[in-house]
Amino acid sequence: GAMLPREQDMIEQLGVGRTTLREALRLLESRGILTIRSGPGGGPVVRHPEPSDLMDSLSLILQFQRGTLREVHEARAWLEPVAARMAAPKITSHEIGRLRELNDVIRASIDSDEKNFAEANNQFHRIIAASCANVVVQTFTETLLSVGETGFSDLLNAPELKQSVVEEHDEVVNALEANDADAAENAMRHHLQHATSRRLEDNPVLMERPLRWLR
Image (cartoon, rainbow, N blue to C red; front, side, top):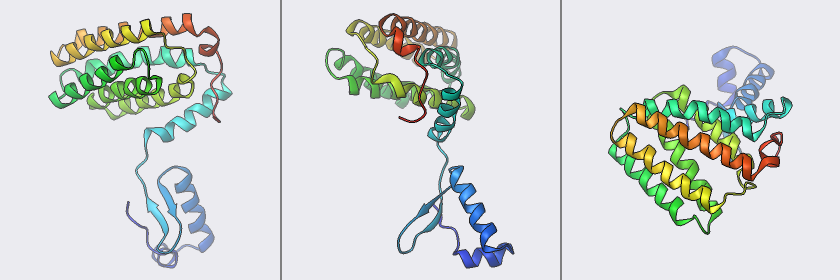
């Protein structure tokens, strides 16, 4: 959120030319470190890079490599059980309560609201990733979740799948609340492997369709 000094001040402080400074600012903006605020009092503002920044780069790579939604789901099924194991001894009672609230939202949307189901499901997994206290695991988990969102709205999520999601989420939360790392890892692995296999059955074409960078 901090504003950088005026252009002329930076030129004098750094001892560089105007062209060099502007190229540097453009590079930092392209890397997500700065945003350029327009209007009176505007200029370069420091921003906090987010996992979504990595998502854009990863989505572009996956498009060129013809990566699929199935592969994203399979990667999650390997990574997120590790995140659940790491979160088990660290997760707070507040986070456990939030996970239960989100699962209640999913339960209420089984027969109706696809948007609420998708958003609550995604947030559920993000909270567990954030609770693992490992920024690398968290960032890659959140990035895969964001990449997976690109095709989620097109997926057929049968009521039976949603019901199993709720039940499997309950198992994950119970294991986390008990601080049982083995049970949390196993519950998350079972959940994601089951969800992946079910979506392959219900959405075979979409799951094997190459991901698109531009949406």
